[in-house]
Length: 97
Image (tube, rainbow, N blue to C red; front, side, top):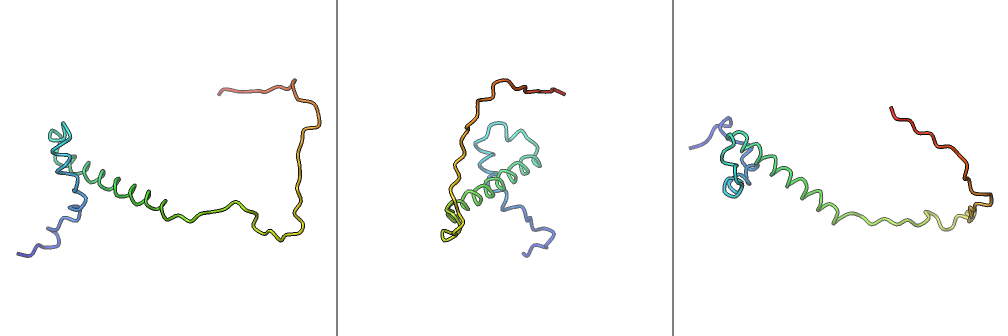
């Protein structure tokens, strides 16, 4: 017997964790059915999205911090040193609102 389109549950794949939660999570059976299915769907989506997100780090391109053009002739080294005295007498104002 064919099901009508209105009878097909598009959220059924999201309920993969429903039997596991029903069996292993204490107090899950006491929740209302709609809350049980919503919790199962949210957990399934969260696990799926975080899995794909973490897998994306395996295939990330490597970057380097090298200078973009080594043949640039105007590049010079600049050393910055503190040739003056240390600042010891300055005020630091803080306001709490």
